[in-house]
Image 1: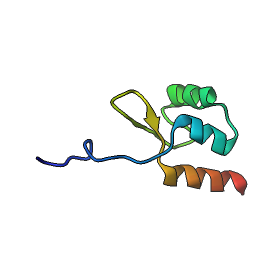
Image 2 (image 1 turned 120 degrees about the vertical axis):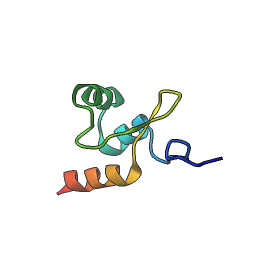
Image 3 (image 1 turned 135 degrees about the vertical axis):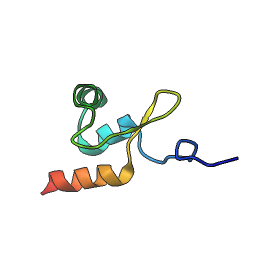
Image 4 (image 1 turned 60 degrees about the horizontal axis):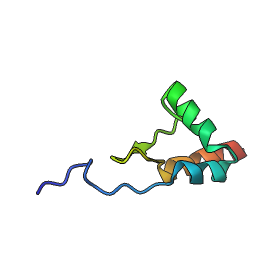
Length: 68
Protein backbone atom coordinates (compact mmCIF):
# COMPACT_ATOMS: atom_id res chain seq x y z
CA UNK A 1 0.00 0.00 0.00
CA UNK A 2 1.36 3.39 -1.02
CA UNK A 3 0.90 6.34 1.30
CA UNK A 4 -0.17 9.45 -0.57
CA UNK A 5 -0.68 12.94 0.84
CA UNK A 6 -4.43 12.40 0.59
CA UNK A 7 -4.32 9.28 2.75
CA UNK A 8 -2.20 10.76 5.54
CA UNK A 9 -3.92 11.94 8.66
CA UNK A 10 -4.31 15.71 8.67
CA UNK A 11 -4.41 17.51 11.96
CA UNK A 12 -5.98 20.87 12.39
CA UNK A 13 -8.82 22.72 14.06
CA UNK A 14 -12.48 22.77 13.18
CA UNK A 15 -14.21 25.88 11.89
CA UNK A 16 -15.94 26.28 15.24
CA UNK A 17 -12.64 26.12 17.13
CA UNK A 18 -11.09 28.62 14.73
CA UNK A 19 -14.05 30.96 15.21
CA UNK A 20 -13.77 30.79 18.99
CA UNK A 21 -10.01 31.40 18.82
CA UNK A 22 -10.27 34.61 16.83
CA UNK A 23 -13.64 35.98 17.92
CA UNK A 24 -15.58 35.40 14.69
CA UNK A 25 -18.78 33.50 14.00
CA UNK A 26 -18.19 30.20 12.22
CA UNK A 27 -20.73 31.23 9.56
CA UNK A 28 -18.67 34.36 8.81
CA UNK A 29 -15.60 32.19 8.23
CA UNK A 30 -17.51 29.90 5.87
CA UNK A 31 -18.95 32.86 3.93
CA UNK A 32 -15.50 34.41 3.44
CA UNK A 33 -14.12 31.03 2.37
CA UNK A 34 -16.88 30.67 -0.24
CA UNK A 35 -16.43 34.22 -1.51
CA UNK A 36 -12.64 34.39 -1.66
CA UNK A 37 -11.36 30.80 -1.49
CA UNK A 38 -9.58 31.36 1.82
CA UNK A 39 -9.97 33.03 5.20
CA UNK A 40 -7.42 35.84 5.17
CA UNK A 41 -5.01 33.62 3.24
CA UNK A 42 -5.60 30.46 5.27
CA UNK A 43 -7.02 27.54 3.28
CA UNK A 44 -8.61 24.58 5.05
CA UNK A 45 -8.26 20.89 4.26
CA UNK A 46 -11.61 19.39 3.28
CA UNK A 47 -12.25 15.94 4.72
CA UNK A 48 -14.19 13.26 2.80
CA UNK A 49 -17.09 13.89 5.20
CA UNK A 50 -17.23 17.52 4.02
CA UNK A 51 -15.91 18.97 7.28
CA UNK A 52 -13.10 21.51 7.18
CA UNK A 53 -9.87 21.34 9.15
CA UNK A 54 -7.83 24.50 9.38
CA UNK A 55 -4.02 24.13 9.69
CA UNK A 56 -3.05 25.04 13.23
CA UNK A 57 0.26 26.68 12.31
CA UNK A 58 -1.34 28.97 9.71
CA UNK A 59 -4.10 29.92 12.15
CA UNK A 60 -1.48 30.74 14.80
CA UNK A 61 0.27 33.05 12.33
CA UNK A 62 -3.07 34.70 11.57
CA UNK A 63 -3.71 35.27 15.28
CA UNK A 64 -0.21 36.68 15.82
CA UNK A 65 -0.63 38.99 12.83
CA UNK A 66 -3.92 40.35 14.19
CA UNK A 67 -2.32 41.05 17.57
CA UNK A 68 0.27 43.41 16.08
